[in-house]
Length: 400
View 1 (tube, rainbow, N blue to C red):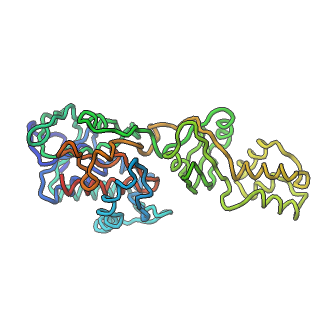
View 2 (view 1 turned 180 degrees about the vertical axis):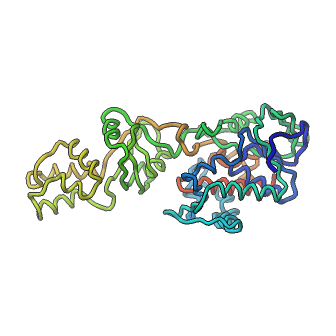
View 3 (view 1 turned 135 degrees about the horizontal axis):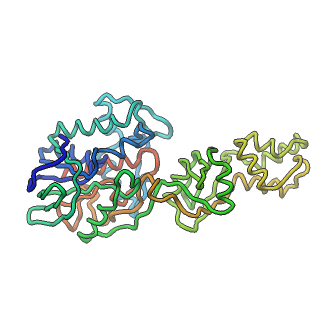
């Protein structure tokens, strides 16, 4: 039942702050156990990040979900929750509700229809489990009591045995996202891993920015590498720098001052190809060869940047090698990222050392749980962060 207010001084078994993916999953699971569950959120509607995700179709999980698709200071922390509630469990829930879906690519599952179907599914499960959802309600104070917690809210006082924090991170602030969950963790003495925007476009400066602006709207399949991380998907030139799936992926690994290596023609050794072309068709223009393997605007920009003219026969071995390196080994030094405004998720959060990997309960504060994005577990692009929300919400819902 979705409400706009509740009685002051109400007593609940479980209060969940945050009516997003993780919060609603936890609520329905706790409700199934016969717990009196109240979900509160300052937003006017539940599941807003779900609603806008995946271009309105919600990339709700990934067939290839595994621990190595997540970043955390403790890469093994997510293992327990992901094993106890898998991508196949969530797919079964989607099928139970008759929601049609499809695999787009790389194991990414999307609704055939609207992402609203996922929100409605979660709300239906919550309703069947007797969960109450109170919207338009902000929490102003949280205190520990002998039997649990006291919450001072804009709708009055609420008391509970278990308190679950599912408030996400500050990514996409236009949706009302804040860092409230981190502040609460700190007030209870829990350690935090510094946060930063993740799955976010890069910004460029100087000549790199000018080049990107001239190519704005051009997309190309590429391989993007940084240290041991490597992603092979599309990149997109923008008026501010670089975006696209491969860039968003690598941004989670990037730190200020680091160069990113981009292969604009993965699977093809351009230097070798140019040598072959020179031997077979020495009178062919370099620009023509580049335009055969790259988008024409990108080929033209590379041709102009290199400053070479003439037929392949006129190019020395070293010049052809430099052309190959410019395409297969383009090195980019981002000036920064677009920040939380466009970041899909937040990296960092509540230190996993503070939490039980089985229940997501704070080790030092019995009855206090943290789930979803607020925890220092961040997935790759492609439905992994939703799966962490489902898995961590399920785990906490079995105990809260």
